[in-house]
Length: 245
Image (tube, rainbow, N blue to C red; front, top):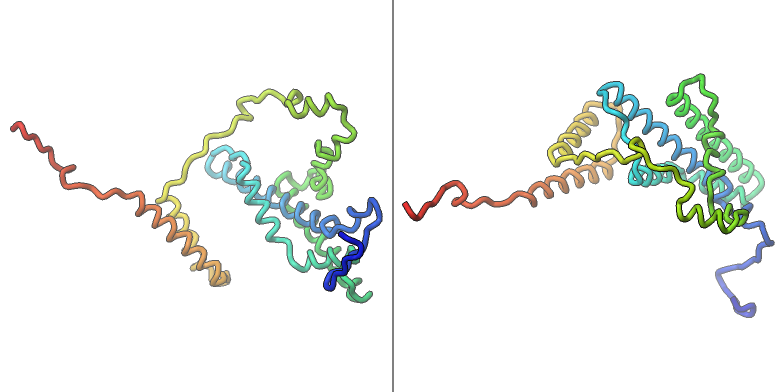
């Protein structure tokens, strides 16, 4: 930007070197909250699969990339706007009074502690109360995985080996992807009807109008899909016309 350029609505301040990471709102608690909620969803998913195995005898299905994407979306949606606002306040980017800043920081710490307790509860449900895995251990379990930052300390040969996959283990039968069973249109409609019946029978369960609108939209989309796949039959299909007789 030209130093002589005058901006009427924007004020630019240069940041000292190597301080960006300390001033980022994401590093002030947003990423921590997101990781906590994502890993909590991961634990809940595995618990549901193991419970299903006990009830039906069906082996737990492996997580797919689609499952991870859906859990990522859900985890981000669970981060409240208040948490994001408090993370911005923690970086001193938002100019607020001292009292408001103290209150916001206190709320942020309570939110982080609440996420940590919820995740610890999910870990205990998955592994048992006598496990030695803490919420902090689970959050930082992948901190030492190879990333862009690690390349600076790696040799050229190590980088080449990593890219070419020379250090990867041979895939076994257990690692092979399990067969995905398609869900029929009839099964999808039955599941939606069961869900709607469950919501109707739970008197203390409140559902927003927007949610019901989307629910009905999904149901109509499935019904339209069923109708579009139906083929109009011809009368000739029911008779065997033999012109030689």
